[in-house]
Length: 74
Image (cartoon, rainbow, N blue to C red; front, side, top):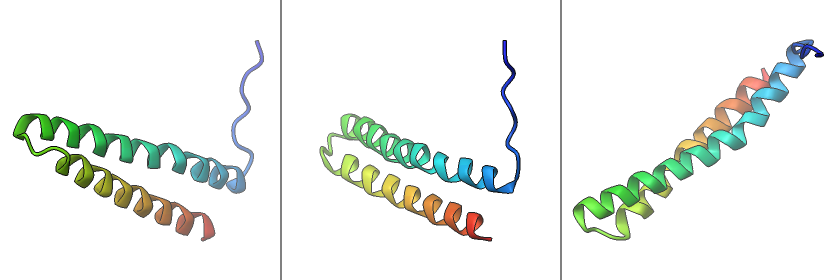
């Protein structure tokens, strides 16, 4: 069974960091949606908590995107 090779240099680590941004972005949006959906069901405020959760998740995803790009450019 071949063993996986570790990243070879700093460029590989930056690439992995940038590739993970998509997963983080999607997770933030999905988390905001599900949290908003739960709160809408609990308080009967449909669809406002879902909208707020998706907006908050998108904002957090964009912040992580900008942080990752800034780290990779250093």
